[in-house]
Amino acid sequence: MSDEVTRASVDALEMCMASFDDLLGGLDADGWSTQSLCPAWTVRGVAEHLGAIEAMLLGAEPGSMVDSLPFEQAGEWISSVAGLPDAEFLDRYREVLTPRRAELAAMSIEELGRPSATPVGPGSYARFMAIRVFDYWVHEQDVRRPLGRPGHESGPAAEIALDEVHRSLPYIVGKKIGLPDGMSISFTVSGPLERSMHVAVDGRAGLVDGLESPDVSVSADSTTFVLLACGRIDPEAEIAAGTISWSGDDQWGAQAARNLRFTM
Image (tube, rainbow, N blue to C red; front, side):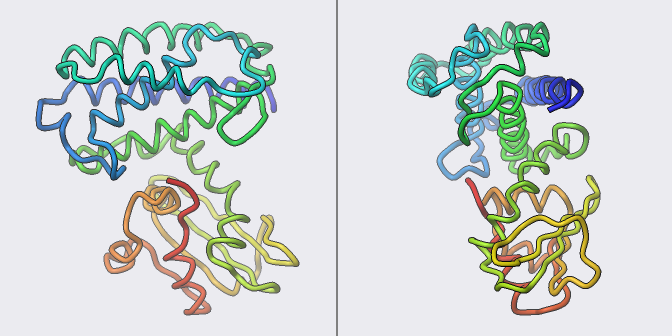
């Protein structure tokens, strides 16, 4: 991982934290209690989750969490803020995020490159921060859509979130969609982000640089694509609305559009 990519993850995470803080600062009581796109969480619940993970990481030196992550500390922080009035909770959230943002800004490339446990297995601290960008950005959209306050759908954080789905496409195509051996599929996303992604099944599904004549082509706007992959929105509703469509093999196009979800 280059120094530029390593620093980019931290810079994008700062953008997520700043954008989410601005969003929380404008909420009234109804906003805090609005159901998010996560079935188990209101807007307040999403904020508690994000604050808890950063509370867990605050003060932990990069390289100190190589074998596992102390998620029990996140649970303890959530317990400590449960029941607080929304304004007091926001103060507690910022008491974590302000020093955490300063801590991240001060980290060296060497520190960011140290080994670390991550939610998807062993990696580097920078890789962990890229996963934090994915989590923060998706959760921000979890909140923005129900509140009717769209935003932050483009830029470095959105690109990193799309990267996480992109790298998971072989699993999605092979295991969730079940595209047969010998077939291929292209995914094209358009504004806010523009990208074409291609998978061919040759024994097993794998990313390829391009496809001249894919068997199936799926198209969606980038935010819809990521939210479908994260299980946040109903594929049937998006198909009916025309926000995701396909061409080529109709059976496998429909199967792809309905089975992008790989996480929640």
